[in-house]
Image 1 (cartoon, rainbow, N blue to C red):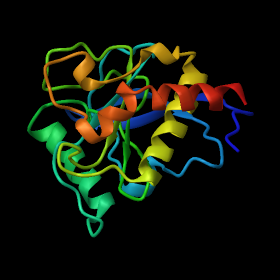
Image 2 (image 1 turned 45 degrees about the horizontal axis):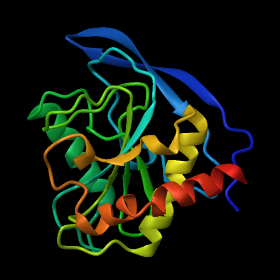
Image 3 (image 1 turned 180 degrees about the vertical axis):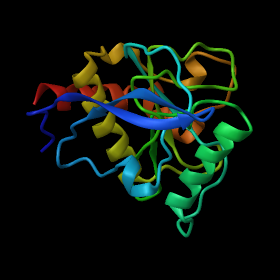
Length: 204
């Protein structure tokens, strides 16, 4: 059973070094229910923020895919670390563009702190959006039931925590010209499965 009891939004401060000076960047930490398979940032080797953005308030949940085929044999923590390094060094973003990433086994990786807006290579403004990426390319891959289950439970948790109406649970392609999150994932948004199941969990 999915439980929302005891959900707290906590704020901690992370000390990091930028331009040889110590700066303090606020990182909002979520307290998750025990049935979410969360891999916390500290567990996969997240590097503390060295830059910041204006914080935002979550009012939408937007689903993405990675756009690159992902295999069961992949080293997921290494992949997430590489994405963080690439995002900072090549894109000059403050962090991974997504707030959460879901692997092929349904494990949910914390990524960019939720209190900062994500980033995108497309034309929509991600401020106010909680961004969830499902690893893989769902134009060519098939979403696993365990991934869909994790996606629905995570989305329900975020919707409850931030009081997001289920009508504001959408896919990347609903805001920009893109194939993301891929046809095999998007169909669960398009046919109402995700919104319906999220609403059912919230009501419990």
